[in-house]
Image 1 (cartoon, rainbow, N blue to C red):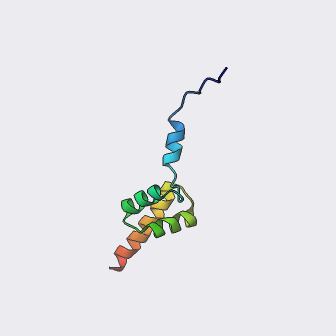
Image 2 (cartoon, helix red, strand yellow):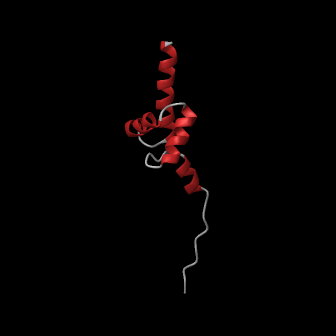
Image 3 (tube, one colour):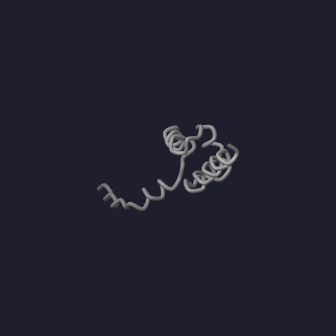
Length: 71
């Protein structure tokens, strides 16, 4: 007799969306397009601050603010 499948919750989905998978090209492209930065800079930010979407966007956003200040 097969095991009954557990009911899926939205919790796992929410946790997944809070992370950026640096090894997944589509996620890197999405974040790159969203922030206006290159894919390489997104991967660099992921390596520097971890894969938390908030921290990665904060890192990329602060780099963008610095470039605007210099102009």
